[in-house]
Image (cartoon, rainbow, N blue to C red; front, side):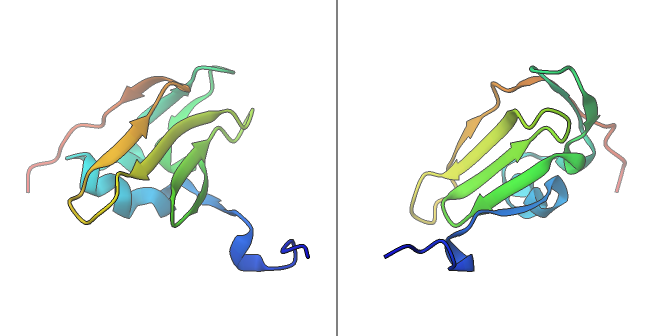
Length: 101
């Protein structure tokens, strides 16, 4: 029996801003405004403009121009806040200046 009609089994596609909660746990700056460069097509833009495919097992951010995977983040397991991060699809990640609080 196929589960293709079950929406909970289908990957969800959102923009990279939807990954902000997970990424704020990892990075100490506002990562969604950081500039990314795709290693595939060379597109540069804010991380928040990437396409998010995600679910309970982790997130995948893809380039909106060529759909190459730029960033993968998966929790290690448990509740200790450890993550596996794969950024090999990203040529660069340039942070924005940190504003004083």
